[in-house]
Picture: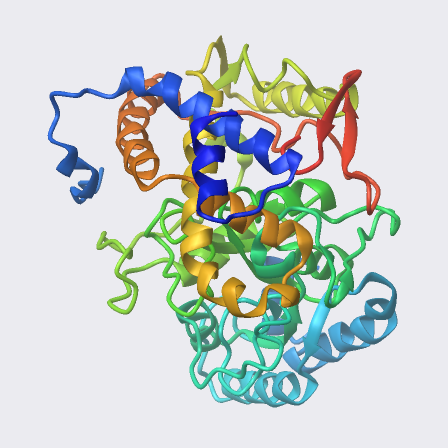
Length: 54
Length: 402
């Protein structure tokens, strides 16, 4: 069982098998994608207002 | 009849707003019992607004192309003194005391509201198989879904129950019903159209936009909807511009357009008829002067992963308080989606937002290569109501993600 599912169950969130599969898939995707994050970048950039391209 | 045709017919005296409105109301009376596009019909408001539109035009006041045009609003846009349900049991008796900005702007442009259209519960799904108001049915085959979540709006426009309609799109909710019902649907850049007064689903992904019979009509409607709104914190300030092309001949528009046809993802698993339709459209556009290039798009699965996580967490943030108190008032599929969002750790949401920024950079660079990308909205045509899986090119897929 993946970490997110375990944590959800520990918090009393009841998930059926389909939900668990979807949650596990999300966890795997985000774990793999984390390689794309620039860890030297200030995380605060998430909240930076995007400049209007025009 | 399109917005452009109706606007011309009203001004030439061939018809009036009152006549168009009565025709739409008659169609609603005839077709809505079977197709279930509307949750609330507003004949008194429609007749009053239509009479006013005609009187204004007679007196020389012309508010533009939408003046006197009967339209419908998705029932998650707040309408003053008219109930706004979001297709849910939770809000089944909610009567707002204000209009959403989109509703207000269209009214100021002279549009006539014939009613509020049905949707997937809380706009959180694509089938419109609504447990509280009943399934909405595709007008081309009433045993099939219209797509969602703005399914009622799409059915209303496809059948002439309204000449145009508003919709909202978080993960396809304008585009998917447009695809399944054969319409034009437009999801504009985030912040261009105010979402003030639209009941939220996932606040950083929600968009309000038009569902119309033609792209030209969508541009006419977007001209009214777009523009900065201080009441919406996500609204952007940008110079007012018209989205209606100056050129009358489509060939003049397409002559200078560079279109990218993706080699990967969109055409890898797709129904043969849908593929044929898109390629025929490409051929027509090329004949009309567009330049086509084949190319690989960046990994769309990465986008989907980040979008699905963002959607699930934000929807949970909106609905968790209601779900705690009134779980039995939620449909099973919506409650299941919200529960998944509740189970995702906060750190994952923040990392997803960092990835989102990174992916935006990748796609911005890629989009410099062409003016537009031609893709199907969905790889399949409308599936039957109640069917959860579909066969896409001999592979089974979940209707919600196909």
